[in-house]
Image (cartoon, rainbow, N blue to C red; front, side, top):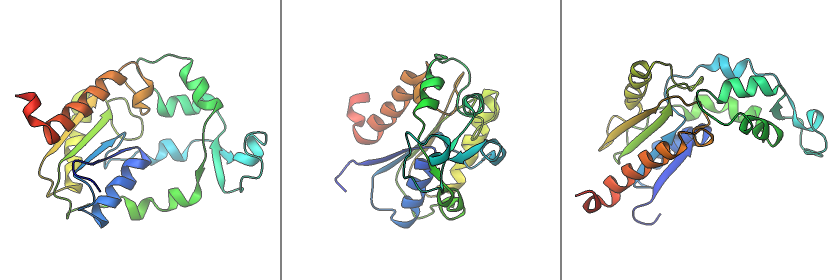
Length: 198
């Protein structure tokens, strides 16, 4: 990795980033995890109606192995991933072009959701207050959840978190997206270019 290279992930990608930090703690200089916490509401995901992508939408997923699944109810998907202030047409597009998830990804969660005590670089966690999977409103409760998540990074040189109000799991698809981007960029400036902040 080059100098000043952060690992940035969202949701499952955040868990992969955390697993990478656990196994290869020197591979990057900071960890930025969005749509993430150590408090998972598995029931939200478990209750989603799923079906093989190839049978649910054969035109889009012709030849896709049956183990690749998609959500089958738009309203369920919206309730799981959106909340607060967002353009109501976005979940429609999200559902129309949704991608797949596999049984293996879910089965692997037990391996990747573990502490990374050897990671000693800065960590930022950014999660929505109304994230049905990873946080719980009101703001104070969500802040407590994100603060408790630091237990996975006990030796991080810096641990910060931000709870984004009036927002659901898909952080960048809500009206608050610019707030999320600003929080992440401010963190990176502090870590990599502190002279810019005075």
